[in-house]
Image 1: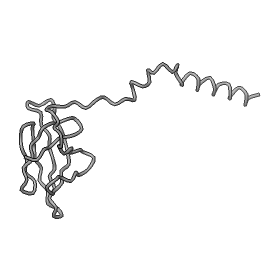
Image 2 (image 1 turned 135 degrees about the vertical axis):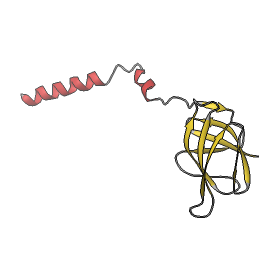
Image 3 (image 1 turned 180 degrees about the vertical axis):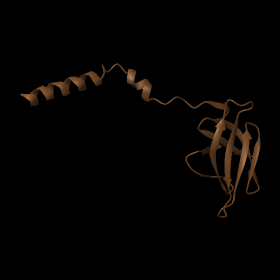
Amino acid sequence: MKTIGLVVLLVAALTACSGDGDGDDQAETTPAPAKCVGTDTPGSTRVLSSGPVNLPSGGRAVLTETHLDAEPATARLSLLGTAAGESTAADVSVGGTVTVKTTKYSVVEICSDRVQLTKS
């Protein structure tokens, strides 16, 4: 008899937790869109914080932090050359440039989760 009572309690608890299926839980699991400053352009290179991105003319870059509330909005990139241990930090803003392996890149967009660069 105790087993049946336990099963009834378990079913009741699961039913209460499952919701009514009206989609309210969807809003909690959908990530908010990234906040951005600037405008992405076709052919730009997306630099993320998840790991180094190979740049078109050599070298790599990784996003280490963003400050969208600053005036102007800024981001810090770690720029990595092709030689082991060769790295430089650069603070950038939209409209600014950064040089990696003798190639200049323009910053066209800074978002909370990425920076978009185009070859200048």
